[in-house]
Structures are given as structure tokens and as C-alpha cells.
Length: 132
Image (cartoon, rainbow, N blue to C red; front, side):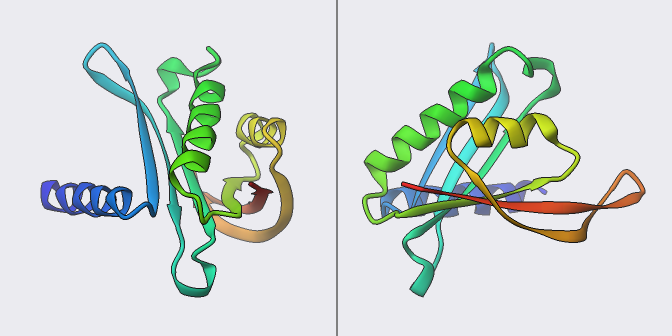
């Protein structure tokens, strides 16, 4: 597991150096409680950034997710000048996240039925995007 994490971090650092990614973390004390990243895709999709964001349950509903999303969007515009679009996926049952993304200008593009196996059931995945 440590080797996989090490490879991931090294990969992210290389992408950041090449202006192909931004990565932010949220710390509470000495513990990481949130993270967000935008990675540019490859080749003909190199102008599209893919957003991933995660927040620990212990810090939800405190405005931290909004601040993290706002910060990663702002930083990505500064650090990824070739980016024209940002896309993401969200579980259909995650109303809180979907609402947050809509608040920041993301629009639903479509859904992939039953693409996620979560808590012993299949749920749809929503695809969203936003122009930069």
C-alpha cells in the first residue's frame, strides 16, 4: 500500500511541475481531512481538467467543502492555462455534493445507470462539467 501511495504522490508532483495538475489538502491539526485535485487529461483531451474532491465526514457541513472547491477552481485557472473545461462524476445519491457543484457553475451532462456498486446496491453516476 505504501508503494502505491508513494507512486501516486510522485506522479502528482511531476504533473504539478509540468502544469498538468493542481492538488490541495485540508488539514485539521496534523491530520489531513480533505483533498482536491484537478488533473489535465491526455492528448486530444489535454484542455479538459478532471476534478476529484474528498472531505472527511468529521468536517462536513462546515463550509470547508465550498472553500476547498472554490480554492481548487481558482488555483487551477492560475496554474493550468491550457484548461478550457472541468469535468467530474458524482454518485446520484450524493445530493450534498451535486448541489455544491451546481452552486459553482457545474452542469449535468448525463448519467450512467448503475455504474457504481455502493453499500450493496448499484447506483447511477452523474457526469458534470463547467467551462473555465
